[in-house]
Image (cartoon, one colour):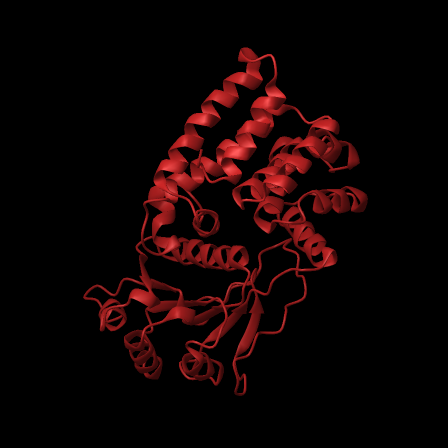
Length: 352
């Protein structure tokens, strides 16, 4: 396989140390943005968004090398004995394969046994990506990979907690796109989206797509200065988590700061529609991403948000969203009251 790199112009923030499960680490440990050349790839750490990005970049690279790439997704927690060895067995025509295994931190004993056996003699035409989100389950497998068995590599996806780390991430997004953002504009953008790395990335992409030239304070203020979208997502997150009081306070703050009710309802609708899409889905997020038209991190986030919800409650909120959308667009003389009612219904998870 050709040696892989970060690509021309890609920023290189410092790699974080792996969360070791014990034992000596004898393999390379890479940051999420660097493409590995090895055939066994352990993607470790709690930051699911970065892990999804790393897996997606590797798939795109392998497919660019050979369009005949076969992609298979497995779930380590619902694994059937022999699946891995069957998928990785040499094919008649020698097509390259990418096998992505999710939830290794919840792996079954059958998967653990098969994976350890596979490491002893990996197929040279197969790239195996193992996603481990943290915890002690699968410790023997992690220790074996990190000790060098199979000749693997570890991509470390540690959580970005500090503002400086998030600024470094956002700066890399712009640099990779070949765009410059002023330091003050970068700080303002990160402050606006500090709670969600995925939304910060989406905001970076929007600015890249909708502006030209250097990105200054003026562009960030134009798109996010009123904090309409940002405040809407904050209110929606609080309401979906069942925190009605804080959600109503945040709603009032957003409205007092000049936020328009219309984009606020749109933000609510985006999150609720995603939850509705995911509600009846089963299986690994990576496998469902294509059919649902969502990124794996969106599926994982929606599944967390769905805790405590029923289908009936979700249906009531979907109907209330349509009514509130009409209200804030002129059907009601008190759109703020309609918004407050919607927040209350969402915080109650659709229960009347």
